Figure 1: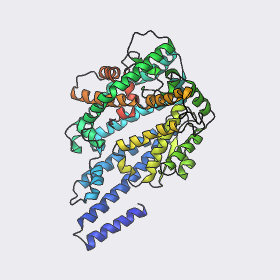
Figure 2 (figure 1 turned 180 degrees about the vertical axis):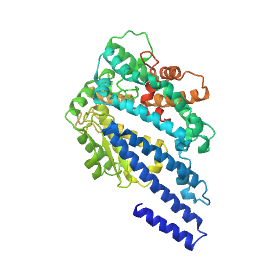
Figure 3 (figure 1 turned 135 degrees about the horizontal axis):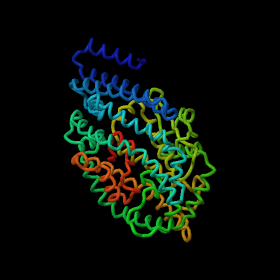
Figure 4 (figure 1 turned 120 degrees about the vertical axis):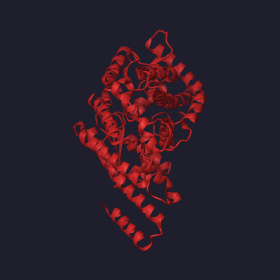
Length: 476
């Protein structure tokens, strides 16, 4: 127990001993105590998650810590429900700690969810799914057969786990009642704090779909011409799009851009940069946005030369810092990823006292703010010296550069939307129609919404998405 908790306990004693009528004050103090317990659990999970990334043999410790946090949150929820006269300005805190999501599942079911997600994570890390060879292969290889074999080889490892997923996704039926919701859909909307979110998302997609279809058609034709593929299909093989799920097409910008000279200039300039240098540039942007720096501990503790190229962030609430772990590879995609991450870190730095509690929800606002990083990164390419200073402002022959910049933004951001929506819609539909073949429905929606296909369209690639293996919603 730290000094803050001791002080809060003393305040509770004072409240009860000298002013028994002041029930609201005692509620505030008890919620703050709950926050400190949750912060300790959050920090422990962050540390064991980092340990597991660096040493997969430590996974058992991580699993036990995650299950222990589940017990804590379930106990807190039960305790909080007995509170009365909750002050209005503490109501949101009370709600977050009381309706805390999947943690309120029956203990055996929660443990099943944790065990399954960790088994998938261990499989992914052991097989090197996010290591430089695989990620960079999808980004940089330009041979259809090689890309097909690379992608399929990694997706096939999930095939033996696909049947185990169906009982896991069905746990959502048990998750919404203890959270005071009437359906999985309303439960996910509650977790995202987005009332009628799926109705709004459907309306948004209806508006965006024509633009996405135009972009998809343009990219499909460019890919067919580049690889000399016969024009006899309307879907794009997902492994030709430069990312694991086809949600970011910026890695194949040299194929997509009608005038690829801009992309070549950027890639050539980025070759001479280190990950740390790009984070320094991103920190300049967070300062200009008045979000502050990334912090001294970030620079002291971060690892920029790991074998895993997925960018991981780990926060410590007690010591108030966030660190990053990623590989040393710098390209256009990682350049934008780093800028997104820098805004994420700067936002976390604003308030670590509530981070563990806020982590119980999925914020559309934070997601939108982080997404600004990519746009800022592209806009700052001239200022950072990666393209000519007048690239975005000059006219004449340089107009093509400006159009290329707009297209880069589109292929980075737009492909995420249909994937996010179909990921949730497919799961919701399956839960409403339990007899459906999940994998068949998954690929049917991938083709319908994203316009992509696999090799056999029986691959259980969705298991490689931790939002799906952990029953999290993508609604934003």
